[in-house]
Length: 197
Image 1: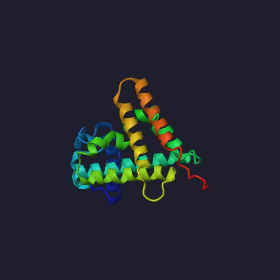
Image 2 (image 1 turned 60 degrees about the vertical axis):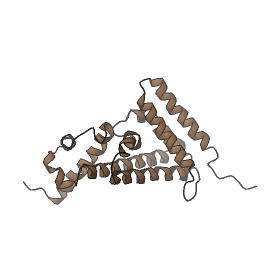
Image 3 (image 1 turned 180 degrees about the vertical axis):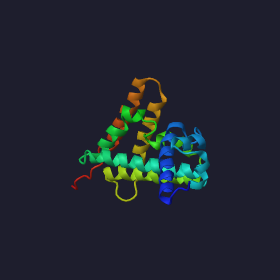
Image 4 (image 1 turned 30 degrees about the horizontal axis):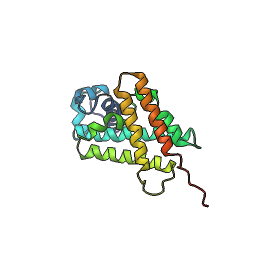
């Protein structure tokens, strides 16, 4: 039975969505095409009708995951317009987010894997990471190009979630998250423009 173009596109989007989650859970090399397609309710035979290669799917799934992450940050920021950075930190540096393997931060879940992938996957990560840095920069008053402070804050946040996920001890995990929150807040104390004297 022939599939309509609309259905084919819906199937393609379903595969990208499933891959976005499964890659975060298992890594790019931790799951094969057969299991990826099965996760979307399809057979492996249809894969090459929809994607050039597994790397092509990895790049598209990475874009999807990073776009989703930016949307989650935007939603968190909107919950506290007076202090969007603090709102994002409450969400991002939480035990709940730390436990989210399939829907959590793709930079934490796949950052080291992305470093070993080709240019398409790296380009997806670069664009998503820049979006995150620009969001932080806008909240701390960095005009134009971020000067590095926003990059340092993002690095601290991502590193804390990575370390918190990597340990067995829940108390140590909590300490990593709380220490990062304190460090980022300390960096952002002077984030609001100062009155001229």
